[in-house]
Structures are given as structure tokens and as C-alpha cells.
Length: 159
Image 1: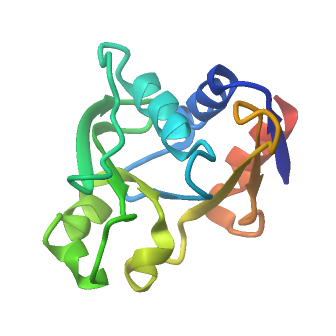
Image 2: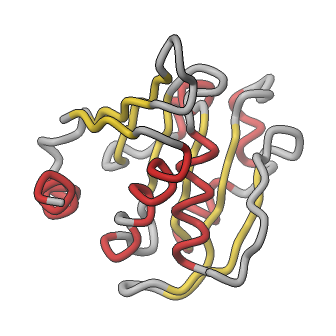
């Protein structure tokens, strides 16, 4: 299933639609080249859980940022990972991935760098930006067959 997002604001607003479908242990893997909109998506989702957050930064240099969150199905934390600079996949233990998988919602940019540690039931989103206008993005969901995500995907298709 593909969605055309015509601006950074539209990307963030689309991400906010995921809020009421997420609960502890959920993982969203964000794939795409540099500038494809992974961080923009993350910002929109994180801010939807906590409107008091004024800035959501990419965790490129420290690999993880943790935010307080309150949603329909959980109150806790969102862990925003960026594995771009990960040199050894086993570094995920040092940054708390195990804790996040059992006690939080996790957003993971560049998940292919830690593929061995990514759970099977995560949702994979593939973002790409338009060649001529980098604010226009295509977001593709390729996990339509996973039972865990069926309700969310049905909702997104209708909205």
C-alpha cells in the first residue's frame, strides 16, 4: 500500500494517525535514503503522543532519544533509534534496545543496520522523496499481511 505525502507537514500529520494503534512493544522500522522523511515521520508521531515536546531531533549522533508519551493504548516512552552510525550491530545492547522492546514503542531509522535484532512483528515503512521536490514523499507499507497491523492499515486506507 502506497501513500503520497505532499509536504513535510503532511508526512508528520500522516504519522500522527498511527498514535491510537500503538502499544508497548510495537516497533516501526523506517527505511529510506538520507532526506527521505524518516525523521519527519518520527517527529510527527512523537509530537502526537506529547504535544508539549517542542523539538524532536534525529538521534544520529547518540543513536537513541527517549520521549515521554501518552496514547490511547499506553502511557510510557517512545524510543527513537537511528542506527545509521552503528558500526557493530551488537552495539544495540549498549543503547538499550532490549529494554525498549519490552517497555516502550520503538521507532527505528536504518533498521537494516541492526536487522538481526529487529522483531518479526514490526511494521516496515519505506519512504522515498521526489527527485524534483524533496518535500514530496512516497510512503509504502509492505507488512499488510501481518495480523498485528491489519486494523491500522485498514484505517489508513480509509482516511
